[in-house]
Image (tube, rainbow, N blue to C red; front, top):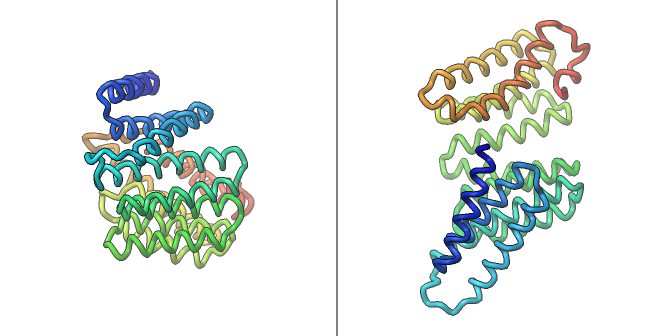
Length: 275
């Protein structure tokens, strides 16, 4: 349906960019195509799209065309870094954690050329996710802290909340519930604006898991209900239909935790936290 339509439109846009000799647009569309294919789990074709994007960028970067100025180079660096981050995710999905780390580090190095601090911080958080997946909690924590510091310096509370939540989740996985609670309370407080509803829901949900780990089930229940109330407010909005995928993704695990607490059938804190 819509995904197939999106793919065909991107392919047509790539062909049009080639005919118009517009490598910048072609690069961005190839990166978008790789992202779409990755989201579908079509890793082989996503990798092929990445290869073509990288080859295009390398060809263009070696150009002596005077029209290829600094803005074009920044633009190319952004989309090349995006492609590399997708490739890192593909490597991680294939169980190649070390290759994923190396690729994500290359993405970060590339991103520094495009002077986009927010994108660079997101990639740093992504590198932390890769380290967390391979069980290197110390490196993951360092990456999250760097991303968080970057956001704080620029007053980006939504981003800071997102990165603090990642730090809290890392502590939850290590059953350091008190430390997780502290981080997640800060995250929830930073995400009070309606613009940051996704970050707030996630922070409240993870905070409820920290409270469960501390055997504070009544407070855990209150936090789960607060996260559901936040989602319900979004469903009342004018653009709720566009938000449904994100809402569904957020609400399923919340209800699972709430049912476990209400029925008291989970048996232990860990069965709730890591279900």
